[in-house]
Length: 343
Image (cartoon, rainbow, N blue to C red; front, side, top):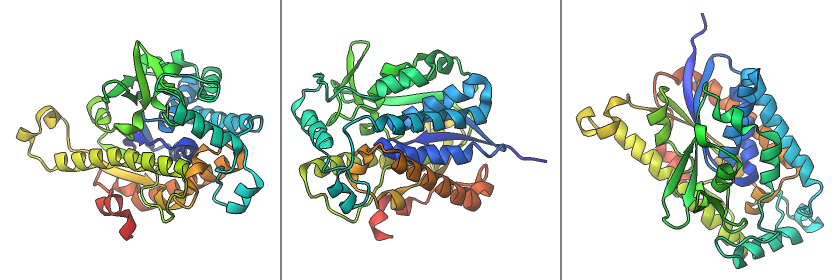
C-alpha cells in the first residue's frame, strides 16, 4: 500500500535561476505519493508557486501543474528571442552564461541606478507583467482551495515584509514580490510601494507552519550562498550584495525555526499549538554558483533548459537520499548552509 507524505514547499527567488526551481518542481510533481499542501515563494519562487497553482486548479492536478510550469518558462525563453537582451560574442567567450557585455543589460543596470524608488522608465518596466497576465488565471488561483499559497514582498517605506495570501493574489502583487530595485521600478499595491520580498524572507517559511498542516517543510534553494570568483565590476558587486542579503534572510529564518524546534512547548508561544517542523533542503548552491552572477538575467531558452535539467537532477538525488525521511526526521544539515565556503 502506498504511503502518502504531505509536504509544504518554500521556493526561493533568484531571477532566471528560478528555472532550477521549475526543474525541482517538475520532478517532485511526478511522485504520486508526495502531496503538496502549501507553497510559499519570493520573486521567481512566487512566480513558480502561482503558475503551479494555476495549472493545478485548471483541473489537471499535478500533471496540469507540470504543463503550466513548462508553458510559462518556454514562453519566457521564446519571448527572449525578440528582445535586445542577448549574449554578445564576448559573453560567449567568457562562459558561465554571462550577459554582462550585453548593451541592453548594461542599460538596465544603469537605469536601475539612476531611477528613483517609484520612478518608471521604459527600461525599468517589468516584462513579466504581460507573461503573468497572459498565462495565469488569477481568479482560478485565488479559488484553488487544494493548495495554500503565500508570497512575500518588501515595503519600501517601512522595510517590513508584506505577506500576500492566495485569496488576494493578482499580477501586481506577484510583480511586487519580484521587483529587484536595481533593475525594475518599484511596484505600488494599495497605496504602498514594494520591492523584492527576498530582502525580508527568501522564501517565507513561518507562514507555512501557521497555515498548513504538513510538518515537513522542503526548501528549494535557487540562490547560491558561496561563490569562488570575486565580483569585478559595479553591476556584479551590486548583484552579489543582493545575493548575500537575500541569503541572510533565509539563514536567519532557518536558524529561528531550528531553535524553535528545541524550545519546550510552554515557551513556544503561538507556535506551541504546532508540532515541530521537519526541515529539508533541495539546494542548487554548488551547481548554480558555477554560473556568472549576471546569468540570473539571462532568459535564453537553452540556459533555462539547462537550469531545469539541473533542478530535475538535484531533486532526483534528494528523493533517492531522503524520501524515506519525510514524516520521520529533519534532513537539513545547518553546517553547509552557514559555512558553505568550508565544504
